[in-house]
Image 1: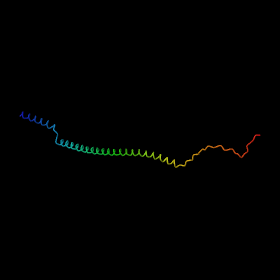
Image 2: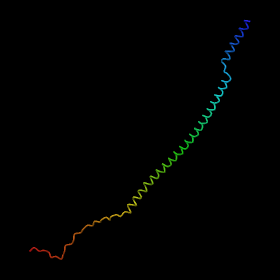
Image 3: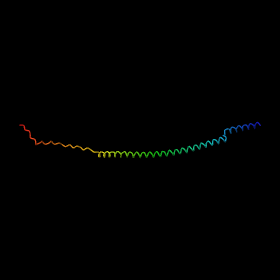
Image 4: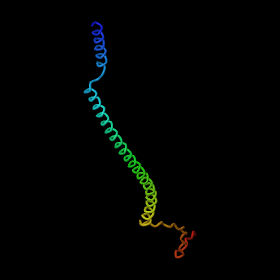
Length: 125
């Protein structure tokens, strides 16, 4: 009997060690649920990241469109500034022509007046 009781004791100890390292069914289910939740959160995060990437791409396209519009406006402003300076010159010229100008005085050479012949010549005698 001693022999059988020893064997049973060893089997019980071996089973305890083996089952002690194993997880219970509840803990396995909890771990599976936690991993499923983490997977769902990761999927949602991925969806948000993809949406943010799309919004960023749209914003970049809008920014590029705004940049090209600003460059075109700058070119038009440069052309307009050149036209404006040319027109200012023309207006100034037309205003100058429209102002009354004083006539220039013409200088004529004065000729000596002829001696008067009506008066008698003085004589020294």
